[in-house]
Image 1 (spheres, rainbow, N blue to C red):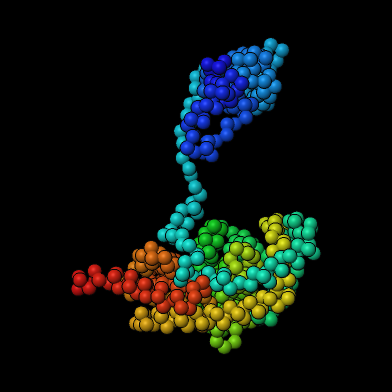
Image 2 (image 1 turned 180 degrees about the vertical axis):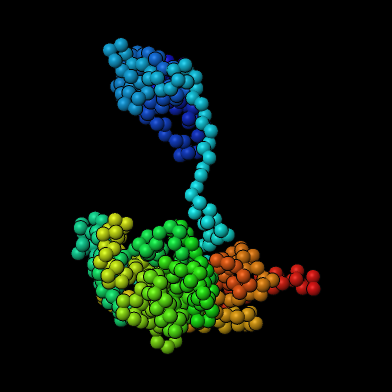
Length: 510
């Protein structure tokens, strides 16, 4: 048997020899040698390999435990445990006549090695191919990355106290799944904040807590559409929304964006009647346009007539730096057909992964059972901590500090862009954590962002947000949330140098 399965390491018979060889081989690296596996594990693996490799054909009678232990130089108990394990898995069968190899397959029964299976052809769902666009992963910690808040300014001490309070008052019950729609305390705290700060008409019972805004969008798709339905989407627009609609197998109709936000062309309601309409009215992403009141009221009225639903993504609505905050579209009229979506990724920190959707009152009651089936709850401690963070006033104080900080950084970025890209149009308004710079058509924004990434900068290409790329969607989306004010001018100077280098071949041709 030892000729078939090979010797074991560190048995009584070869321990001294193995130790001498190991010491000689690793004299200069005493800690680099790996400790051998236990003898019974070694024996099990050797026997398995011999059976699968055909060296022990089906029906072969294995030596008795007493005989094999003597031959291998191990205790009989080691062999007994190995045989019992192999029998439990089905490699061998034990009866009164002894232990025999099981007939695993026709090849094994003939003593032939198992055939190597051909690699199967992987077939993906059709929607998977829609996500293989030109998007390149960018480290969100890089300067000029849009959508990354000033994480170094987050009040960690206050957040730690909120977490500790949640643990002291809620354990061990908070270790369970909890209510799928979210912790009632957090839903009530969000409702109170939205009523006061965003003009949203809601109660806590209308709010569903989600795993970030992305899950909120996915929930809207699952609750209100069927595959093949039409959804209107801002173009250029938020790529996460596009991903949610594609995942739901919806037909996406791009709607252009101008200085007043989403612009519905004449005849669109009749030609492409939507089931959902996605818009970010307070601060359109990525152009920064504010949806005018006239268009808001028209969208609400037309959506009611067509039986459609408006998704109001309140992206960066908390960060407005001049005048009064722009109130939500949801609160303009009673019982508006609006699904209000938000998250704490920008106002708190992205890793928190807490978002929400505010459903109309009648819908919240009707969809309660479906929500319980679709969601499973979780993150209860974080939800309870966030509820306390909001109720104690820490959230409001943090927002105030961040508004002042981002106002300073936006001004510094605007001045730097004006100095180095004077003739180019700057979009973004007085809100959010990014500005958008339009580029001339001959400077490819994808190429420019790739070169910027090689220099350690993370702006995004405006064309990457477009459903139907065109000249107006050539530019850079430049974040300032995670970049100190004094670092913005040098970073923009690098972008200007890279853009100038891309101009040189064109000038030589001219």
